[in-house]
Length: 248
Image (cartoon, rainbow, N blue to C red; front, side):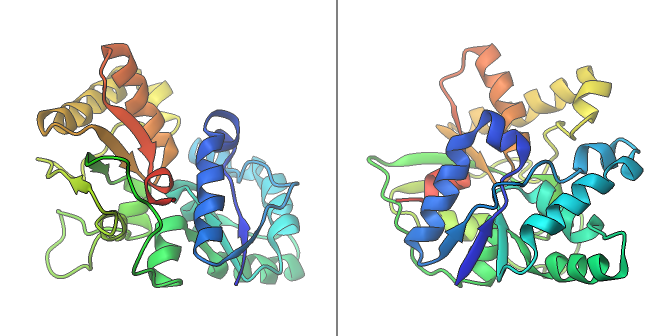
């Protein structure tokens, strides 16, 4: 199975270890992985700020780099959702290619559970570890990676939780408000800084109340927000992307 690795720009710039962990994990699970070197930002920041008309160059570049791959996998729910819903081509030919890409792009945990149907993982933590799972909004409510507390009825299991429970010695802590927004929200954290920080502090406190040693999730942007709050508090709680916990 051939996989093209889509690495969001903030992962590339600030958390390259997440991209490396994603690459290693996919290879350990038998995938042949390539990295299209011409990839850049997917255009989500412009689109979310009301400037979608300025993201055309990002669309063209994404189509140029990722056309023709069996699968496209990314360690980011928000960027994956943006491509799934908003990637378009300017010409009729490019639009057909964009539609094909939209059907082939997957967030990492979605790919592992729905395409690879993983039942065992290579991860072996050196000691027992208490982990809190942050369910990011784009992944949860956009990609349906986990059930939503505001909806009634059967919605399926949490894909990140399903994978984390396969790791020996890893204990998932039960949170009081497991699917509450962390307040990052892309440019929201700039436009509404005080509200964003308060929401982030509330999420951190929930994990701390339940003695989580590590906070994990499938969106580095949310984890970056929570990590900044933890660092300012001088907290010993670590933040790790889910790929870093699943890889051997």
